[in-house]
Amino acid sequence: MNSVLLIIDSGNSFVKWGLFNNDLWLTQRSVSHDDISELQTEFSVLSEPHLIIISHVARDETKSKICKFISRWSIQPIWHHSQSYQCGVLNGYSDPKQLGSDRWAALIAAWNIEHKACLVINAGTAVTIDTLSDNGKFLGGIILPGFYLMLNSLYSGTQLKPNKLGVYQNFPVNTQNAIHSGIIHSLVGAIERMYGVLSTQLKHSSINCIISGGNASLLSPFIKYPLKIINNLVLEGLVVIAKDELKKRELSSS
Picture 1 (spheres, rainbow, N blue to C red):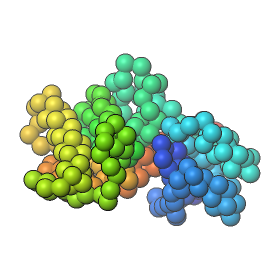
Picture 2 (cartoon, rainbow, N blue to C red):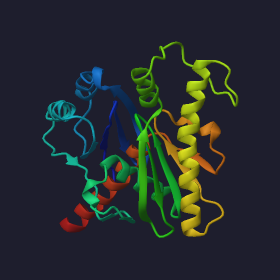
Picture 3 (cartoon, helix red, strand yellow):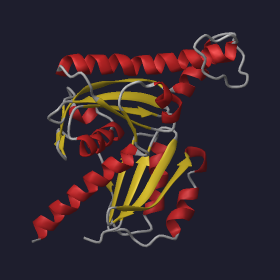
């Protein structure tokens, strides 16, 4: 099926989008909330897609602007929300609808890649560390502040003064490096603990990790477990969901 899909991930800090067709990304772009007007220009040169699917976890103002920018086409977008079950993944949240649509899409992407138990890490403005079982059940996960939220919180709540960014050291010998290394330890420590909890729960000696997000490169060098770095995991999950939707439409019309 030759269907052009417009895929949009409206996150906490950036709106990422891409055009997908015939199992290939034609383009992928990212704009910050401050520069969201650029979307209007970027969309203005596109032909009408066959399907638009959007994951939105940002503020209402951002949603309103996206609605305005895609209103140039007659097609009605799919505003993606978490389901109890979708594309092979069972949602173990106590209230499945409360799970963020970005986390749900990332889990679906991870399951589509692995088809077995794995740890799903999204290192963006916030860091989410989610778990999948061998049969595709989302067992639960944690949310914690991302690198720069931790950094800004430390500066705003103490007398420490912002200076140049530090670098990681095993034994930091200046304040900037102590802060940088401490945040890395906090985030990687949370990943290691969740890895241990999942391994114990499932009685597995080795589980793959998938990491995505703008700060994945900050953390990936320190993760000692089997690791796959996947750019824009949420977009990849939305593609899986969009393809499933197209199949359902095709079946219903036949």
